[in-house]
Length: 327
Image (cartoon, rainbow, N blue to C red; front, top):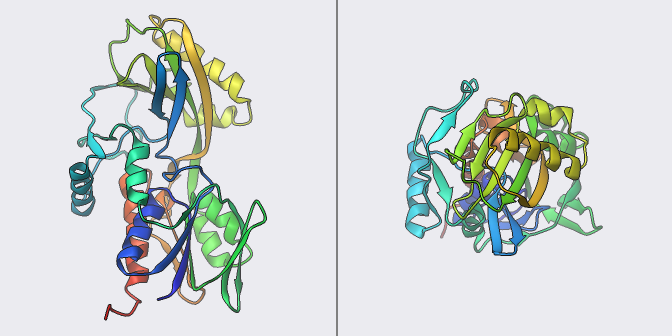
Protein backbone atom coordinates (compact mmCIF):
# COMPACT_ATOMS: atom_id res chain seq x y z
CA UNK A 1 0.00 0.00 0.00
CA UNK A 2 1.18 3.56 -0.60
CA UNK A 3 2.75 5.57 2.21
CA UNK A 4 1.07 8.79 3.30
CA UNK A 5 2.21 11.72 5.43
CA UNK A 6 -0.47 13.84 7.12
CA UNK A 7 0.53 17.20 8.60
CA UNK A 8 -1.87 18.26 11.33
CA UNK A 9 -3.74 16.21 13.93
CA UNK A 10 -6.76 18.40 14.50
CA UNK A 11 -10.20 16.93 13.88
CA UNK A 12 -9.77 17.21 10.08
CA UNK A 13 -6.45 15.37 10.11
CA UNK A 14 -7.81 12.72 12.47
CA UNK A 15 -10.91 12.17 10.31
CA UNK A 16 -8.75 11.88 7.21
CA UNK A 17 -6.44 9.41 8.96
CA UNK A 18 -9.38 7.32 10.17
CA UNK A 19 -10.63 6.90 6.60
CA UNK A 20 -7.19 5.90 5.37
CA UNK A 21 -6.53 3.57 8.29
CA UNK A 22 -9.65 1.59 7.35
CA UNK A 23 -8.18 1.31 3.84
CA UNK A 24 -4.96 -0.19 5.31
CA UNK A 25 -2.82 2.75 4.19
CA UNK A 26 0.65 3.21 5.67
CA UNK A 27 0.41 6.46 7.60
CA UNK A 28 2.57 8.87 9.52
CA UNK A 29 0.99 11.93 11.14
CA UNK A 30 2.97 15.01 12.18
CA UNK A 31 1.68 17.63 14.58
CA UNK A 32 3.48 20.49 16.32
CA UNK A 33 1.42 20.14 19.49
CA UNK A 34 2.00 18.04 22.57
CA UNK A 35 -1.37 16.36 22.05
CA UNK A 36 -3.72 15.83 19.10
CA UNK A 37 -6.76 17.99 18.60
CA UNK A 38 -5.61 21.34 17.24
CA UNK A 39 -8.14 23.94 18.38
CA UNK A 40 -10.15 21.23 20.14
CA UNK A 41 -7.70 21.77 22.97
CA UNK A 42 -7.70 21.53 26.76
CA UNK A 43 -5.33 23.40 29.05
CA UNK A 44 -4.73 22.51 32.67
CA UNK A 45 -4.74 25.05 35.46
CA UNK A 46 -2.91 23.85 38.56
CA UNK A 47 -4.82 25.22 41.53
CA UNK A 48 -4.50 24.68 45.30
CA UNK A 49 -7.65 22.57 45.13
CA UNK A 50 -6.28 20.40 42.31
CA UNK A 51 -5.92 20.37 38.53
CA UNK A 52 -8.65 21.88 36.41
CA UNK A 53 -8.92 21.20 32.67
CA UNK A 54 -10.44 23.97 30.55
CA UNK A 55 -11.30 23.71 26.86
CA UNK A 56 -9.87 26.97 25.57
CA UNK A 57 -10.39 26.57 21.82
CA UNK A 58 -13.67 25.00 20.74
CA UNK A 59 -16.08 24.88 23.68
CA UNK A 60 -18.66 22.60 22.10
CA UNK A 61 -19.81 21.44 18.67
CA UNK A 62 -23.01 20.49 16.91
CA UNK A 63 -24.05 17.90 14.35
CA UNK A 64 -26.38 18.70 11.46
CA UNK A 65 -25.56 16.16 8.74
CA UNK A 66 -26.51 12.47 8.95
CA UNK A 67 -22.88 11.35 8.54
CA UNK A 68 -21.59 13.48 11.40
CA UNK A 69 -24.61 12.69 13.55
CA UNK A 70 -23.78 8.99 13.12
CA UNK A 71 -20.16 9.67 14.06
CA UNK A 72 -21.30 11.55 17.16
CA UNK A 73 -23.50 8.64 18.18
CA UNK A 74 -20.43 6.40 18.04
CA UNK A 75 -18.53 8.87 20.22
CA UNK A 76 -21.44 8.99 22.67
CA UNK A 77 -21.43 5.20 22.88
CA UNK A 78 -17.68 5.31 23.58
CA UNK A 79 -18.33 7.76 26.41
CA UNK A 80 -16.13 10.57 25.08
CA UNK A 81 -18.88 13.12 24.32
CA UNK A 82 -22.20 14.06 25.89
CA UNK A 83 -24.82 16.79 25.50
CA UNK A 84 -23.82 20.20 26.85
CA UNK A 85 -27.08 21.38 28.35
CA UNK A 86 -26.29 25.00 29.07
CA UNK A 87 -28.54 27.90 28.19
CA UNK A 88 -26.45 30.42 26.28
CA UNK A 89 -27.34 34.06 26.90
CA UNK A 90 -27.18 35.81 23.53
CA UNK A 91 -26.22 39.48 23.85
CA UNK A 92 -25.28 39.98 20.21
CA UNK A 93 -26.95 39.06 16.92
CA UNK A 94 -25.71 35.81 15.39
CA UNK A 95 -22.82 36.16 12.99
CA UNK A 96 -23.62 35.62 9.29
CA UNK A 97 -23.49 31.96 8.33
CA UNK A 98 -23.76 30.62 11.87
CA UNK A 99 -25.43 27.22 11.94
CA UNK A 100 -29.03 26.93 13.16
CA UNK A 101 -29.66 25.76 16.70
CA UNK A 102 -28.81 22.14 17.41
CA UNK A 103 -27.87 20.03 20.40
CA UNK A 104 -24.54 21.21 21.79
CA UNK A 105 -22.02 18.45 22.44
CA UNK A 106 -19.01 18.55 24.77
CA UNK A 107 -16.06 16.31 25.49
CA UNK A 108 -16.19 13.99 28.51
CA UNK A 109 -14.72 15.20 30.73
CA UNK A 110 -13.16 17.58 28.19
CA UNK A 111 -12.28 17.69 24.50
CA UNK A 112 -8.76 16.29 24.86
CA UNK A 113 -10.31 12.93 25.75
CA UNK A 114 -12.32 12.93 22.51
CA UNK A 115 -9.32 13.75 20.33
CA UNK A 116 -7.11 11.28 22.22
CA UNK A 117 -9.76 8.64 21.52
CA UNK A 118 -9.77 9.56 17.81
CA UNK A 119 -5.96 9.30 17.73
CA UNK A 120 -5.79 5.86 19.32
CA UNK A 121 -3.74 3.48 17.20
CA UNK A 122 -2.61 6.19 14.78
CA UNK A 123 1.15 6.69 14.17
CA UNK A 124 1.37 10.24 15.52
CA UNK A 125 4.58 12.27 15.83
CA UNK A 126 3.96 14.87 18.56
CA UNK A 127 5.85 18.15 18.87
CA UNK A 128 6.85 17.66 15.24
CA UNK A 129 6.50 20.98 13.45
CA UNK A 130 6.98 20.66 9.68
CA UNK A 131 8.70 23.77 8.31
CA UNK A 132 9.20 22.75 4.66
CA UNK A 133 8.15 20.06 2.19
CA UNK A 134 9.65 18.97 -1.13
CA UNK A 135 8.61 16.61 -3.91
CA UNK A 136 11.62 14.44 -4.77
CA UNK A 137 12.06 11.57 -7.20
CA UNK A 138 11.60 9.14 -4.32
CA UNK A 139 8.48 10.89 -3.03
CA UNK A 140 7.56 13.63 -0.60
CA UNK A 141 10.14 14.78 1.94
CA UNK A 142 9.46 16.71 5.16
CA UNK A 143 11.84 18.93 7.12
CA UNK A 144 11.01 19.48 10.81
CA UNK A 145 11.84 22.51 12.93
CA UNK A 146 14.21 20.47 15.10
CA UNK A 147 16.21 19.26 12.09
CA UNK A 148 14.66 15.82 11.67
CA UNK A 149 13.83 14.73 8.14
CA UNK A 150 11.33 12.19 6.81
CA UNK A 151 11.03 11.17 3.18
CA UNK A 152 9.73 8.61 0.71
CA UNK A 153 6.01 9.35 1.04
CA UNK A 154 3.82 8.64 -1.98
CA UNK A 155 1.20 11.17 -0.84
CA UNK A 156 1.25 14.30 1.30
CA UNK A 157 -1.91 15.61 2.96
CA UNK A 158 -2.11 18.89 4.87
CA UNK A 159 -4.75 19.34 7.58
CA UNK A 160 -3.78 22.84 8.71
CA UNK A 161 -5.29 26.31 8.83
CA UNK A 162 -5.58 27.40 5.21
CA UNK A 163 -3.08 30.23 5.62
CA UNK A 164 -0.44 27.80 6.88
CA UNK A 165 -1.20 25.44 4.02
CA UNK A 166 -0.75 28.27 1.53
CA UNK A 167 2.61 29.26 3.01
CA UNK A 168 3.96 25.71 3.15
CA UNK A 169 3.05 24.98 -0.48
CA UNK A 170 4.10 28.25 -2.14
CA UNK A 171 7.21 26.81 -3.80
CA UNK A 172 6.09 23.23 -4.45
CA UNK A 173 2.43 23.61 -5.47
CA UNK A 174 1.61 27.22 -6.37
CA UNK A 175 -1.86 26.35 -7.67
CA UNK A 176 -2.99 24.62 -4.49
CA UNK A 177 -1.23 27.29 -2.44
CA UNK A 178 -3.18 30.03 -4.22
CA UNK A 179 -6.44 28.17 -3.69
CA UNK A 180 -5.77 27.83 0.04
CA UNK A 181 -4.84 31.51 0.23
CA UNK A 182 -8.40 32.52 -0.67
CA UNK A 183 -9.56 31.56 2.84
CA UNK A 184 -9.50 34.10 5.65
CA UNK A 185 -9.23 33.09 9.31
CA UNK A 186 -9.52 35.48 12.26
CA UNK A 187 -7.27 35.24 15.31
CA UNK A 188 -8.55 34.89 18.85
CA UNK A 189 -7.04 35.66 22.21
CA UNK A 190 -8.43 33.27 24.83
CA UNK A 191 -8.29 33.91 28.56
CA UNK A 192 -8.50 31.20 31.22
CA UNK A 193 -9.40 32.38 34.72
CA UNK A 194 -10.03 30.69 38.05
CA UNK A 195 -11.58 32.55 40.99
CA UNK A 196 -12.34 31.88 44.63
CA UNK A 197 -16.05 32.26 43.82
CA UNK A 198 -18.45 33.67 41.21
CA UNK A 199 -21.71 33.85 43.16
CA UNK A 200 -23.25 36.54 40.98
CA UNK A 201 -22.95 34.61 37.71
CA UNK A 202 -26.47 33.96 36.37
CA UNK A 203 -25.51 32.20 33.13
CA UNK A 204 -22.87 29.60 32.38
CA UNK A 205 -22.31 30.76 28.80
CA UNK A 206 -22.68 34.23 27.30
CA UNK A 207 -22.15 35.34 23.72
CA UNK A 208 -21.36 38.94 22.80
CA UNK A 209 -20.75 40.22 26.32
CA UNK A 210 -18.01 42.79 26.30
CA UNK A 211 -18.66 45.94 24.24
CA UNK A 212 -16.30 44.90 21.47
CA UNK A 213 -13.81 43.06 23.67
CA UNK A 214 -15.38 39.76 24.67
CA UNK A 215 -17.15 37.58 22.14
CA UNK A 216 -17.75 34.53 24.30
CA UNK A 217 -17.71 33.54 27.99
CA UNK A 218 -18.14 30.02 29.32
CA UNK A 219 -18.03 28.72 32.89
CA UNK A 220 -16.38 25.45 33.82
CA UNK A 221 -18.73 22.79 35.16
CA UNK A 222 -16.05 21.95 37.73
CA UNK A 223 -16.07 25.25 39.59
CA UNK A 224 -15.70 29.06 39.44
CA UNK A 225 -13.45 29.14 36.39
CA UNK A 226 -14.14 30.86 33.08
CA UNK A 227 -12.85 30.74 29.52
CA UNK A 228 -13.28 33.94 27.54
CA UNK A 229 -12.70 34.53 23.84
CA UNK A 230 -11.94 38.02 22.62
CA UNK A 231 -13.66 39.23 19.48
CA UNK A 232 -11.80 38.97 16.17
CA UNK A 233 -11.43 42.76 15.98
CA UNK A 234 -9.96 43.03 19.49
CA UNK A 235 -7.69 40.04 18.88
CA UNK A 236 -6.37 41.53 15.64
CA UNK A 237 -5.75 44.89 17.29
CA UNK A 238 -3.77 43.29 20.12
CA UNK A 239 -2.32 40.29 18.30
CA UNK A 240 1.29 40.96 19.30
CA UNK A 241 0.70 41.98 22.91
CA UNK A 242 2.22 39.81 25.62
CA UNK A 243 0.06 37.08 27.22
CA UNK A 244 0.47 38.86 30.57
CA UNK A 245 -0.96 42.10 29.17
CA UNK A 246 -3.78 40.27 27.40
CA UNK A 247 -4.80 38.21 30.45
CA UNK A 248 -5.04 41.40 32.53
CA UNK A 249 -7.12 43.16 29.87
CA UNK A 250 -9.48 40.22 29.41
CA UNK A 251 -9.88 39.75 33.16
CA UNK A 252 -10.78 43.43 33.48
CA UNK A 253 -13.42 43.05 30.77
CA UNK A 254 -14.74 39.88 32.39
CA UNK A 255 -15.04 41.54 35.80
CA UNK A 256 -16.89 44.46 34.22
CA UNK A 257 -19.52 41.99 33.02
CA UNK A 258 -19.51 39.72 36.08
CA UNK A 259 -18.94 42.04 39.05
CA UNK A 260 -19.50 39.25 41.58
CA UNK A 261 -16.26 37.45 40.79
CA UNK A 262 -14.00 36.74 43.74
CA UNK A 263 -10.23 37.15 43.87
CA UNK A 264 -8.32 35.60 40.98
CA UNK A 265 -6.56 32.32 41.69
CA UNK A 266 -4.96 31.95 38.27
CA UNK A 267 -5.06 33.84 34.96
CA UNK A 268 -3.63 32.62 31.64
CA UNK A 269 -3.90 33.89 28.06
CA UNK A 270 -3.47 31.84 24.89
CA UNK A 271 -3.25 33.21 21.36
CA UNK A 272 -4.95 31.33 18.58
CA UNK A 273 -3.45 32.94 15.48
CA UNK A 274 -5.94 31.09 13.26
CA UNK A 275 -9.19 30.56 15.11
CA UNK A 276 -12.39 31.47 13.29
CA UNK A 277 -12.88 30.99 9.54
CA UNK A 278 -14.42 34.18 8.19
CA UNK A 279 -14.19 33.21 4.50
CA UNK A 280 -14.05 29.58 3.46
CA UNK A 281 -12.69 28.32 0.15
CA UNK A 282 -16.02 26.70 -0.61
CA UNK A 283 -15.04 23.16 -1.64
CA UNK A 284 -14.51 20.14 0.64
CA UNK A 285 -10.76 19.84 0.06
CA UNK A 286 -7.91 20.63 -2.29
CA UNK A 287 -6.36 17.93 -4.45
CA UNK A 288 -3.50 17.74 -6.96
CA UNK A 289 -3.53 14.30 -8.57
CA UNK A 290 -0.23 14.84 -10.38
CA UNK A 291 1.70 15.64 -7.21
CA UNK A 292 -0.15 13.27 -4.90
CA UNK A 293 -0.98 16.25 -2.71
CA UNK A 294 -4.11 17.16 -0.78
CA UNK A 295 -5.31 19.69 1.77
CA UNK A 296 -8.28 19.80 4.13
CA UNK A 297 -9.52 21.58 7.25
CA UNK A 298 -12.12 24.09 8.35
CA UNK A 299 -10.77 26.70 5.94
CA UNK A 300 -12.19 24.68 3.07
CA UNK A 301 -15.82 24.38 4.20
CA UNK A 302 -16.36 26.69 7.17
CA UNK A 303 -15.98 27.49 10.84
CA UNK A 304 -17.42 24.46 12.59
CA UNK A 305 -15.96 21.27 14.02
CA UNK A 306 -18.47 19.36 11.90
CA UNK A 307 -17.27 21.00 8.69
CA UNK A 308 -13.61 20.37 9.53
CA UNK A 309 -14.46 16.70 10.13
CA UNK A 310 -16.31 16.49 6.80
CA UNK A 311 -13.36 18.07 4.97
CA UNK A 312 -10.88 15.56 6.38
CA UNK A 313 -13.23 12.62 5.90
CA UNK A 314 -13.89 13.59 2.27
CA UNK A 315 -10.18 13.91 1.46
CA UNK A 316 -9.45 10.55 3.07
CA UNK A 317 -12.27 8.93 1.12
CA UNK A 318 -11.06 10.48 -2.14
CA UNK A 319 -7.58 9.06 -1.71
CA UNK A 320 -8.75 5.70 -0.38
CA UNK A 321 -10.90 5.25 -3.49
CA UNK A 322 -7.71 4.97 -5.56
CA UNK A 323 -6.27 2.15 -3.45
CA UNK A 324 -6.57 -1.46 -4.58
CA UNK A 325 -9.32 -3.43 -2.81
CA UNK A 326 -8.34 -5.71 0.04
CA UNK A 327 -7.50 -9.22 -1.00
